[in-house]
Length: 97
Ligand SMILES: [Zn+2]
Image 1 (cartoon, rainbow, N blue to C red):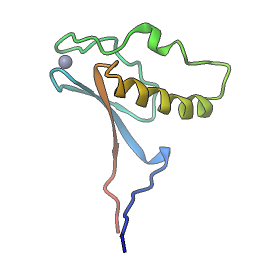
Image 2 (tube, rainbow, N blue to C red):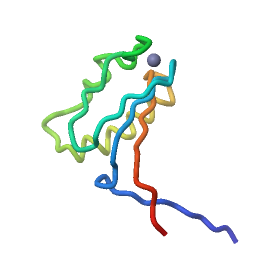
Image 3 (tube, helix red, strand yellow):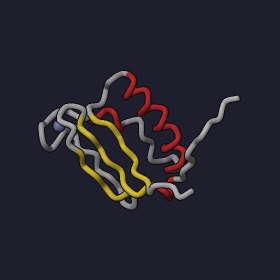
């Protein structure tokens, strides 16, 4: 028998969003309650983080929810292709058991 444990979190559980540079590992942390302007490059070492074309798939006519769900898959593909220069870290409160 295999015991599997998972943590299930909603978007409202996200306390902060951190972007960590893949080159120098410096982090920029934003409150999850406001819009984030993802920098084009690392503010510390200058490593390019993204191209301006990488956000062109965002369609403002769609709802934010549709864009979020579709963006997760797109971002995962970009990460697997090593196409972005930073990691996205979601911070949560430690779950109480
Ligand atoms: Zn950096």
